[in-house]
Image: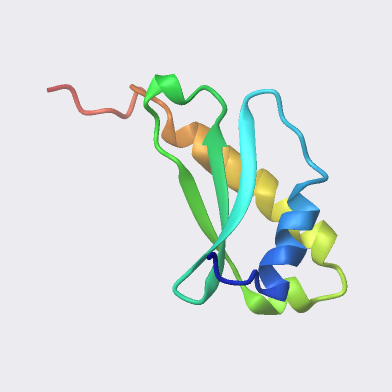
Length: 94
C-alpha cells in the first residue's frame, strides 16, 4: 500500500496538471520530507537525465503560489534545456 499523499504534494501536483508541453512531462514528488518539481523528456529513449528542483514550503503556502510556480517552472525548464547542450564555445576540447 502506498503512503498517503501530503496536502503540499497534492497542491503542487494539481497545479502542474494545468500544464501540458509538447516535449516535457511535469510532475512532483516527495523526497526526504520536501516537495520536488520533476521535469523529464517525453522521449525517454534519448537517455537524458531527469531534472529535479526543490519547491519551498513557504512558496506552496503563499497565496500567489500558482504564479510563483509558473515562474519557477519556466526558470527550471530553461536550466534543464541549457544542461542538454553537448558542446558550446566554452566547452573544453578533449
